[in-house]
Length: 68
Image 1 (cartoon, one colour):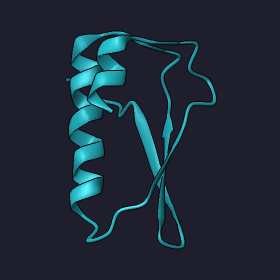
Image 2 (cartoon, rainbow, N blue to C red):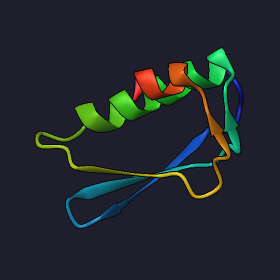
Image 3 (cartoon, helix red, strand yellow):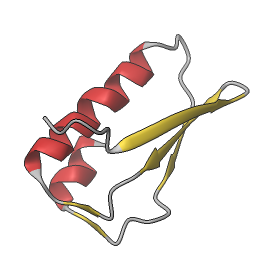
């Protein structure tokens, strides 16, 4: 797995804001890592609320969309 996380998460009240840090989300290893990290965030909250932010994403593969 890559060393740097492809996402950054912050909290705003009871909402977890997930910002994607990659411009192109097409690599299977990165997609798998995103899935694992997002799932950990969801599992950490009894009633998860999540905002997904794609500010610099130019391309998102259908495989990445399927993971989300």
